[in-house]
Length: 251
Image (tube, rainbow, N blue to C red; front, side, top):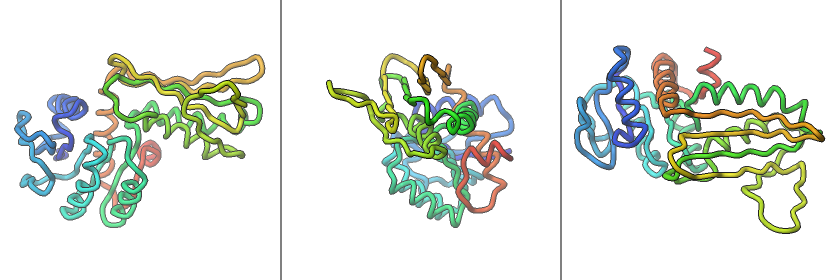
């Protein structure tokens, strides 16, 4: 059994993971962390990892970007592997993760969905053949409570495309004005916020008289919880290092 400390326990994703683990004997949540203290049956919830007394094998984090730096420091002190699923992280936190990964196993993905990460593989395969003749645009949709825009997943998809482009794309966040040139060297990334949409990402390859669309729709948050648990199972067997869905899918 894999013993988990769940960061962001009282959040939407924390509750999804808690429900999923309750029906899976492979995992046990021994403690939670959240700015809102108080028990979330059947485990206690603390204000920080430094307060946690229970023994664990791994930390899973679905919290808020501002809390991650302290969590990383505490995780390193306890020598615990950590799965970071929080989005909207600044560059300084990403650099901190990579530095800490020299001493503990760290897993990070801007999206824990297995489907999104297979989509990335598909995008990297087709982009080199289309880049010179197709404009590339992206539309992402999320619920009205999402704080960051564009989504971390949209940037993850855009970066995966740019990684294989001969001419690197300039990201253009929305289009406004009457004199836009709409250059092929640009990639438009457009954010929609409304209702309870869990997440939808569409990549458009628009050529002369033809259009290719690759789309991923999240129908529930369960897909992210499932990916995080798979990442935790993978990480507890790894040596110190910085890991992503690329390593998990190739394992």
